[in-house]
Length: 142
Image (cartoon, rainbow, N blue to C red; front, top):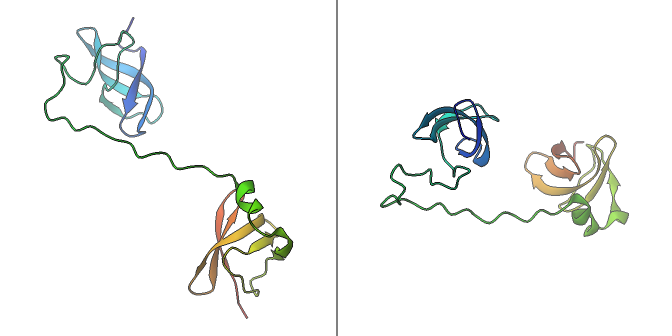
């Protein structure tokens, strides 16, 4: 049974996800205003009620001229170990700001561990992908 102060799953416009919300206002047995339990934004209820009713329109019919959102396909997630397996680990060089590094070269950093150069920037900087982060490091300093 839905009631003010209760919880309902709804689409959050700020989080861009369907999450648990606290019901703030009800009208004709339907939530009309909810607060996201994650980001605490208050907005109009967007989502199906547990009884399966439509929440998008007041009359229950489709809105004329409504735009349909299409979501882009999710990007493929590749693990760090898989990325490193395609690199030649035998050529891993210890990191030093004085050393010159090239694109796709494997680096052994004393703090961040093993990584590879993903980009060479202007001004003596390189982007290095490590297991936990991407770092910008200096190189070729005399």
